[in-house]
Length: 72
Image 1 (tube, rainbow, N blue to C red):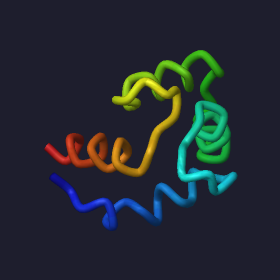
Image 2 (image 1 turned 120 degrees about the vertical axis):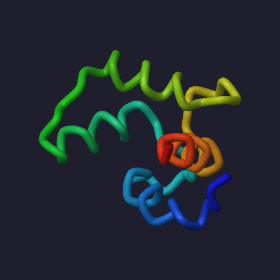
Image 3 (image 1 turned 90 degrees about the horizontal axis):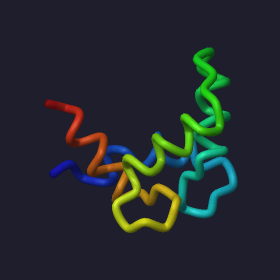
Image 4 (image 1 turned 135 degrees about the vertical axis):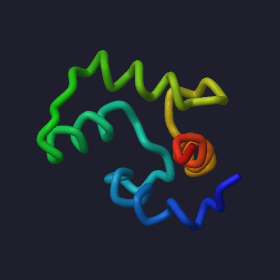
């Protein structure tokens, strides 16, 4: 499993309100900035796919697990 420190800086950039969670709205804004806008529904679906504890937000631990799984 990947070390959360490896992804902490990226996580912090996405977590614009500094609450230690990534919301669907923060993900939606990130995608807008990156030039690949997504709908609110798409952002909510993406968060649901990563959110393992069901709180509707992505924690650093969940983000790290997701990013580590994508390394293949």
